[in-house]
Image (cartoon, rainbow, N blue to C red; front, side, top):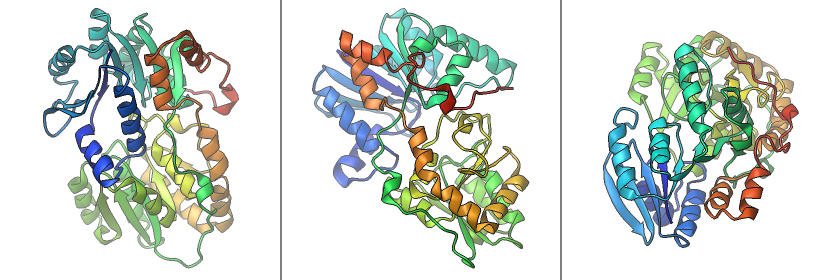
Length: 400
């Protein structure tokens, strides 16, 4: 048995080195993933971890039965290279971590067992996307695709909405080591200026990073703000934007930081901003989980994948996407009302518990891979159509 796990980006070679040799995680659950695949590798012929969009190309066996590959290409622009690597790896089982239809079609053609294991949303933003979603649903429903999993309930309902059979859809989650029980509920400190905002994630337009910087600039004379931005991406572009708006001294770019520092950054902040545009394919970002653990109030956009999980002035401040002036207003409202601030922080624990899914990443993989009747029944019992997930847990999605 040869298992290949295909992922859009990342760098498993670097991750293994950091986790094994230095005990550092740069992303949530990296050690959990590494421990899981290492254990699986001891039970089968080989586990192959393929990262497509890497800075370097490499193909290395890092432990007996465990291989890491960096393709060094953007997969959608150079699918032939990705398919060539997969063909040479000769997998018997394939896990596809991003919805690239060429890989699914290759596996169907070569009769390779597979599952989709996403952290993605499927929204009909325009007619072109509707056609793409229709074609993806047809592929995902193919009998060769055993399961289509997605991160959280909203993301799974988006799969169902585009036509994927709910019997095949499984909501999943990471295994969380940090919980809200480790931290106290927060109160707004009076006269503690400037207020501190934090953003953690990919740094680009679609994640709304520019909106935060614009909002901070709008507030510079009425609500002094210091903003810390952690993550990789178009850092120079947004540094330049902060300079243009004359707030460069208020905005600090931290780059990628170790996972252990993320919670500390959020705990130290007065609020965490999650301003994603609707066009960004969020599922349920780990930033939300981590902010809730830290009991730090969230200021988030009205992204469809947050709906029902983040409710305005109840467990978060929610503003319309791509509206930095309304983001600025939400910041002002939160910091002007100590009771509102405390109430939102107080609801963090219940909000975090609401997000928890019974199926974890590793359990889903091992139950599928070692597919006894008991394993298959366990998976079926956790499908979207099983009745395990109450529709009342999540507000019904309305797409435009």
